[in-house]
Image 1 (cartoon, rainbow, N blue to C red):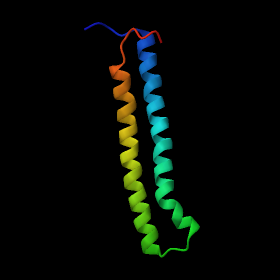
Image 2 (image 1 turned 90 degrees about the horizontal axis):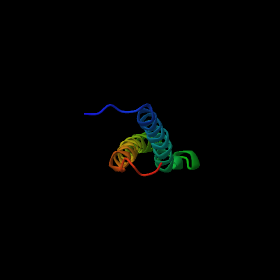
Image 3 (image 1 turned 120 degrees about the vertical axis):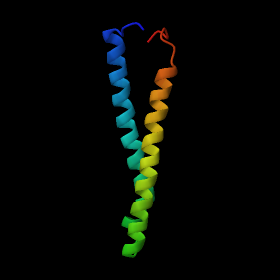
Image 4 (image 1 turned 90 degrees about the vertical axis):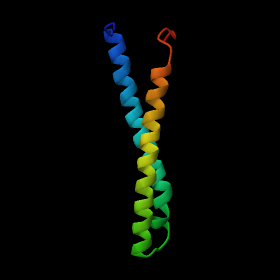
Length: 83
C-alpha cells in the first residue's frame, strides 16, 4: 500500500469538512421544515414535542445520508481527475 501525499491528505480533510458543514446545513433545513409550523401556529405542547422529535429524527437521517453521499462520492472519484 502506497503512502498518501500531503495533497491527498489535505483533499481528504477538506472533503470531510465540506461533508460535515453541508450535512449540518441540510439537517437544519430539514428540522426547520418540520418544526417550523410550531412557530407559525399556536400548537399544543404535545404537538410541539411531536414535531420536535420528528424533526430531530429527520434531521439525523438527513445528516447521515448527506455525509455518506459526499464521502462515498469522493472515494469513488478517479485519482487522476485533474482537480
